[in-house]
Image 1 (tube, rainbow, N blue to C red):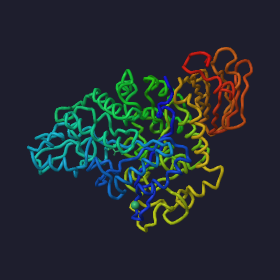
Image 2 (cartoon, rainbow, N blue to C red):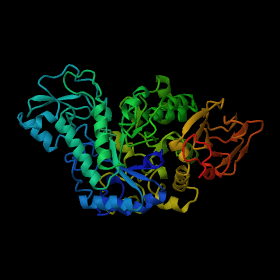
Image 3 (cartoon, rainbow, N blue to C red):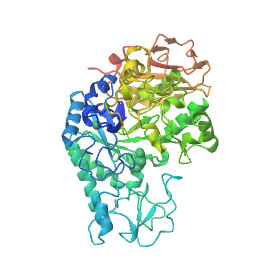
Length: 561
Ligand code: NOJ
Ligand code: CA
């Protein structure tokens, strides 16, 4: 396959306009501010930006409650400012993907307003109603502890409406062909304005059967093909990145056996086991999660992440594994959320220790897939646990030691910048880290640069190499007559490991260190490595002439041309 599918070997950076940069000084970020920061993002080396929702919204779920799919919330600017932004990205060779939140609307959306006031409105059937309170109304909440029910009585409608999430987010009746048509129209609209795809919110719920009788929702997977076909027809290189926290046995239903459904999915399964591995210095369950999520069509790709804008969901781990992660990374009740997760940012979870942060990011970047970085992680930003629920990890970007971290000139930022403690903007900011060659920011820039030069990770096939030590994970990737190998020590103590690369004859005898001078030469086919606590190594197998050795097709032997 021609290797130019952009999402197979890039680095995605996720941000929200609201908290990035406020150019007009009203205390909330905007597109003009973000556009001024594009050279920063370009310099960091990211290949795509994932924007959180920015459409008009009452903002009761940080924009995931949309009241108009075809606009920009006036606080962030205009459609004109949006196009300037996508154009600015294009000029710098960066793609833009945006959130597509179509499982539900805001209860302030005109469709819902009409649906609830007029039973004869065509919009009535765009939502999911019941005359009586359904028997299972107290089941299936996504935010347990905060959200009490999935069905709420509406006085105006004199009926109950279904909401998988908060009660101000009524679910769209996605089985209605008119709703499906509208979803395509929304995609078509933003595609015209320069985006290269969508992070589709809550996909399993979008395609599930809904209604008072749908006690056990059933996914309508064919819908995914419809979305994909439309998108590919309108713009050949556009993608859908699905938010679908599903079990490995369902992965192929989402990717499609022939790669005809979602291009990408976040690998939530690996994410949880990755945090367990970091907490316990035990990589066994992570290795299993990698193998369990290995099958996927050649054009499909995993999105790999550490933390995102939501809680770190640990619901898949065993009770004792979950307990270990809670103890190490979120011991206080205030750090936990929804009975299943941790709401902190990465840096505070890892005690602000740069060695550990580098290890975690190095590991994430070398797992099979495309890395997705959360804004602020590149400077090890912290959280503000005095803010409710997931807000704590959504504070403004910290640019400098200027007032409000250089985020705004306003004295009343809508969301406060972190200005106290070890993670306050005076200590953690971009400007300072730029001056320091050893900073997290400069490290991140270097690692992204190297990650892009190792397409074997994005495209190749991987094998877990036996390290005989649970604290150490060794992965080898093979692609087009080349191999790379990564060693990560998740323990704080140094480790000595001995391993065979596993390639025929003497092909694995030389390992060239891509980030330092620790090259390794095998003795009788085995490498012996002393690796420091939280240490990591990126090796090329053989040597640096890999581009001369690369073949045109996989498994094709040496190229003749
Ligand atoms: C998933 C998003 O990531 C989350 O932030 C949001 O609250 C829900 N979907 C509802 O849209
Ligand atoms: Ca502003």
